[in-house]
Image 1: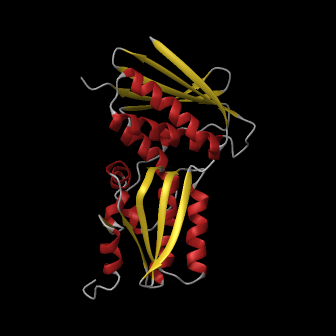
Image 2: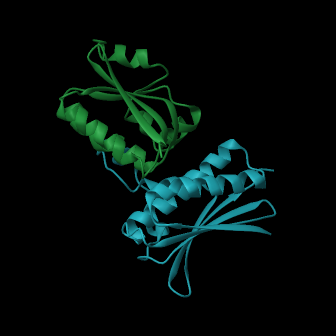
Image 3: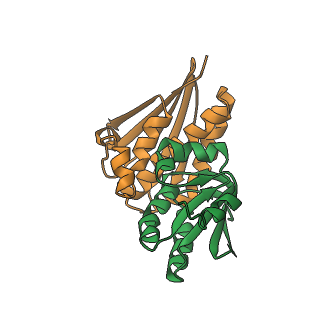
Length: 118
Length: 139
């Protein structure tokens, strides 16, 4: 069953993960693997594009929690973009906007990595 | 009272079937998209807790989900026969503290309580655990 898919590409030295489908306790390990593989390749500038993400549960949110510290300790970040209102509401309910930068568009997030004012 | 139920094996790949079942029942009862999403997520969290904690990832165990709907009250009762767990004893996390220290897990119960109008826990005679999630139909 292909209920969750991850696409990966690079833009200006930033790794972009595109999430598609349903991110729950069943599919969260896939996202975990994707982050592990990025960290192994020392890629710490990560943008997660949620345009085609239809659903997220706490198991999915937990994956972001698991890697953020490591990523930031290596001067990188995980930035999130293009969330539907439904997915954003779940992040918001748990106060994630305090911890993660969330952008409407992927381009803004990529640019932010090169923003000296940051 | 309208009732319906589904039994699934305690496996994470079955979560999608539970969400679909509950969403359909909620839609039939008259909830809008936003409430349907909330109910489906809360039930997913309850089942995920059962799979991971009550049944400790034993895929041969069974989770039963019963929906009963009457007079604007929609109740989802999720039953397992695993290790006893009382979500009402889980302290609400201090979210600021939580986020500052990058802790994982334990968000499920907090979400259930935030998404539903009522979360109750009961032990059914015959050693089953039951989590009851209630949502009222907006008037």
